[in-house]
Length: 153
Image (cartoon, rainbow, N blue to C red; front, side):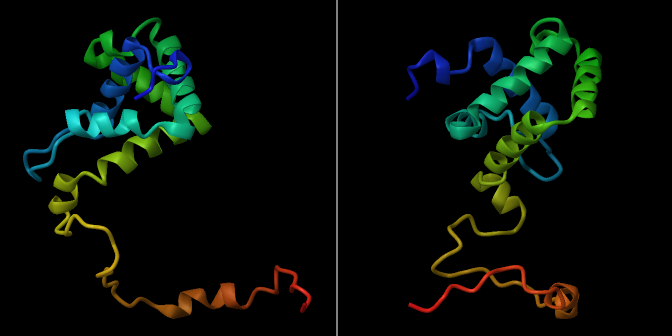
């Protein structure tokens, strides 16, 4: 558990992050999946920030600045406009925020089951992949060597 304020989201940042997660991936009754703001998924998101903490905090700060306050406190239409403006700006913080939310969402067992996959590690059973068109790799194979051989010892 984090106790250092430098590595903890403030309550306002946490509310904003949860709001963003729910906007990115809302629940779907049609597919029987929760939204990314689901309690279990959101707990995974906040626990998984690790090395991405600074970028996520930067993204949340940018959202708060565009909002003129707490993003989560905005009405739905204003939140959508602010999120669109934030997305249009792009940048590493946005990419990181998006990746953190998506990776935690798609490792939730309920979401994995909705994709008709067994929620388990890929090994030792492995996963079968359909064979594709191997000729798509021909341009890569035709490239010149991009590495330097290691001299024999």
